[in-house]
Image 1: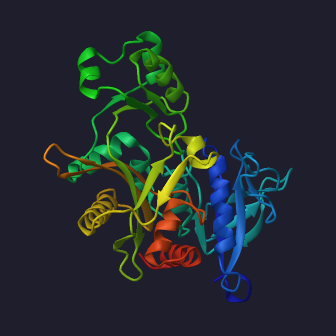
Image 2: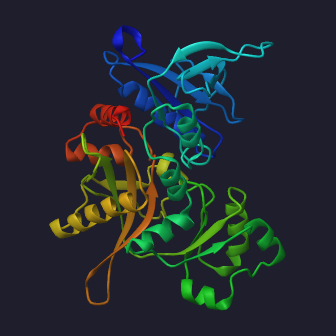
Image 3: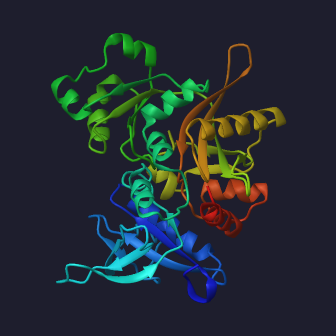
Length: 373
């Protein structure tokens, strides 16, 4: 251990270049506050929107205040040391070809959402530097971030998916052909459909299309975030989520009690504003499910975690509907390898209802990352 008085030194990396920069800042503020100062020494590392890495001010405001979103601003420029023997960060002094050593790091907690963080990119960088880190590895992070390949891998594992169509080079395609979906695809998908960037989160760039005349603008909005766009048929049913956490010692997945998201009257779907800015949803934690339904959700969440080769944690989102014969129909919507991470986020609240409070949750993740693989 390299921290003060034998403490574990944890580099909490947050911000980033994705559209989810602000939500990452909020999550990181909660994680840093939850790390026991008697056991951990926190090194706050912010990634600015332009990609600069900085040693952030520990007192920086990392919360949504009166609708204003936080972001990484200022700080001493730093960089990861590429040599695995360095195990840490270096200060980048202006005018010097080589930065001076700043600190060694025991473990990294990359509280990053979206591109350049949750998609395998920073995981690959950390693998090259030899630093242990919280969360899934390169492949699982990349596959879970890309909705197309999430669906393919889950389908290969026998887990149910909603109907969908993938549009590649969507920006160019829609410019050339506003009717990029043929009549057969439209008939199969029906209305409404959800048009999404294939590799993004927090409902950024997503449009609920209720008339095909809205479709070209919806594709253009999604393509502004990611050139690959996925068009999903609406899946009727209750919105259910379940947290997965690696068990101490074995690393095998444990599932939390599920939760249900219920939108208030007048709210059509769970968009960015409904998630983070408006009082637009109610949450049942745990969800009002039968024991059999709870067991089915938990089993499917664990199977999804294993099918994608996840590590450490994940949140699996479902739709729970009813078939023609009254049977339950469970469909996986998404798998998040680094879900929102505040005490009021669904992942933390589900685990709290299961008996794991926020501080213990963070501690388990850091301890798990330090455990030998």
